[in-house]
Image 1: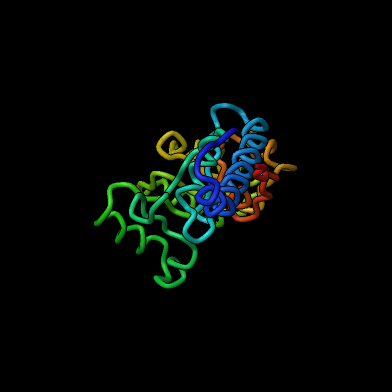
Image 2 (image 1 turned 60 degrees about the horizontal axis):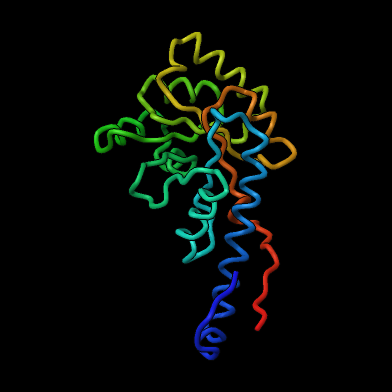
Length: 194
């Protein structure tokens, strides 16, 4: 890229621009490498594990790399997570509360029986947290047996990286979310030469 302008102004913003470009390029590159390892019908999502103040740029870089933005802001979709369930002490109770306020919500589950419960109660997305590919396939089979699989999107999350993402992509999930593409990014080396 060639830029022109007042040298003092260019040098004043050089480091900020380079830091942002190297970070975004690293995220986009890593995202693209992961997207190539999964079937086209499976969407790759970034998580909300982004650098403070850089969420917009991190999520843009994911999209540029071929991934998808998901929950840029907390008000875009309610997600019921393990900590929420622990405070409420009942998955069913917290889902019922969510249904009173929100049309669409996501539920993080740690076992198949909770996935079935969440699907029966109308979750739009069920995050299968730290499930192995085998456990995901089993959960999908059980959801199909209950005639619930087509009523919900399934998201695989937790411990997914470049070495195992292909296996997760073959399980039948709709979404794979990977936190490392934004929280452990290796920037692309760039510099400004005058």
